[in-house]
Amino acid sequence: MVRNVTPGAKAADIALLVLLALAAFTCIFPIVHNLAISFSMPAKAEGGFVTVYPRGFTVAAYTKLFEDTTFFQTFFVSVKRVALTTFLSFFISLLMAYPLSRTNREFKLRNAYMWLLVFVMMFNGGLIPFYLIVKQLGLMNSFWVLVLPMIINVYNVILIVNYFRTIPKELDECASMDGAGPWYKVFRIYMPLAMPVLATTTLFLLVTVWNEFMLGMIFMRSIEHAPLQTYMQQLVVRIDPTLLKSVDDVKRMASVSDKTLGAAKIFVSMFPIMAMYPFLQRYFISGITLGSVKE
Image (spheres, rainbow, N blue to C red):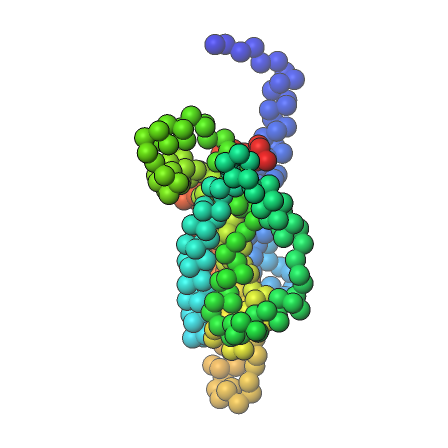
């Protein structure tokens, strides 16, 4: 099929490409700029001379960051937290979404539970009641206080519910006629068909859990048990005069500043998510669009 492209249509396509290029540059530039700062000398970074490439290339900020054993301890805590939270949330959200996707005739309390979920998504009890509950349950300074509050994400559950409601009812009826029970339907029919939205909600949860640092600040008494983001949020350059025993020590400390170290912290903290996103990106758009049509 030959399409007659008018000058106006060509101009519109060019304008759209320019707009998308500007949007892509707006998203990429902060990452490149931050990476350049992390590899620059402190004087160049503090003076504002760094743009998209390092000035006075040095890896001192990363050396300072990785030489601390606490960094690796908190990194392992974050990895364990993300893995466990994602695993539990995946199956709990799946098991919540299936009955809520049924009709009122099949599940008479469906609307009551759905309104309850929407209410708790919009309102919460506040920080002080949350703190008191955690303290009464004996979860202070416990790894589980980093996991349990993050397991259920109501927004993700609603996305999965809406996706389930787009699956043809005939498929469910055929499975019932063949003797399939609810457990078989969930894990052998609905879960494989809902992989796009499940991958999308998993990506949402990964980003949320990985970047969360407030729970570690409030409930962890020792920084070794806190997640990586909590540790990196508190990490600053401290110069101890008693450790400066030679000229080399002075030069090494002078090669790092709060700005270059902060840039290194930002890049290291977002690198795992950036590395994982390409594997889930192909599900992203279809999962969002197909899970946001119905209530």
